[in-house]
Length: 329
Image (tube, rainbow, N blue to C red; front, side, top):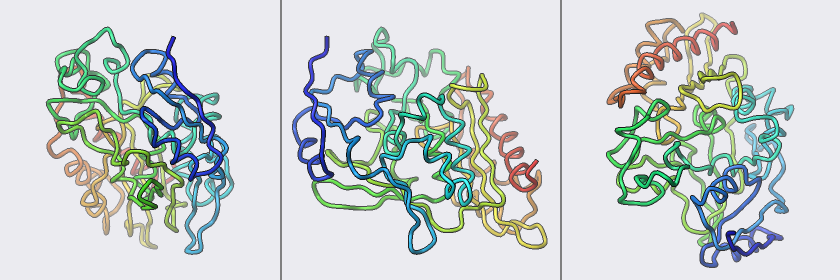
């Protein structure tokens, strides 16, 4: 039995005060945290319940963008009329994640903060996991690594970030609003998560006791031409082997005027390179354009044996997502 204290926060300020206590972590839907506690991977001393915080609204922004509160459930966000109308890429990505039951519980903030992980991280029978026990090694590098990263890896970790929502938000150039002991700040979604480097136990750039309060989407949203492609082992309740969030604006002549592009299932964080998006602009959404973007995105990529197939799969997935986003078929 794991002993821990439980507090229910009544406000953001109250949540920050409670989180300042040793061993405290926030809990919302608990869809990832409870699994890790059951398995003995994480053993927090105090859970700070943030479910009653007034962060569960989806609201238009004055500039035409959209604010999604951190406590908005994934199902509610996926089916919200403004999300479906303005940001269909995000709605599709949300519905591709987990299962209906989990989407009903998972929150926007919690989805972003779920642990970057793999089978070895979850299974404490394997002692070698730098993410779980820094300095112990990485069993995946020479082990079963079919689902693991091919980009941004280090000698310390090759795990992948599991969120579908985060990949779409990266392509949509979302911002994350944070509140902590030192006040409020905003991070670009692409800067929220970290590559493993020599500290793979740190998944994000959040400071101690910092809380996600909202995600903000810029106006536009690529509503007419976007697609989320998720390649996985089964049709539901499976992490992506490779995913592509593709968002396009086309001019009257069918050329790409603007593009958002991010990959999932291939790195410790959603993988987005502005240079790859720039390589699409001014071109037709065809095979050569997809190849140019893929060349940039895959620069420095390497497989670890079982996951070598991801390198050609990324190229095919980008080409398919580009065609589908441009044509709707």
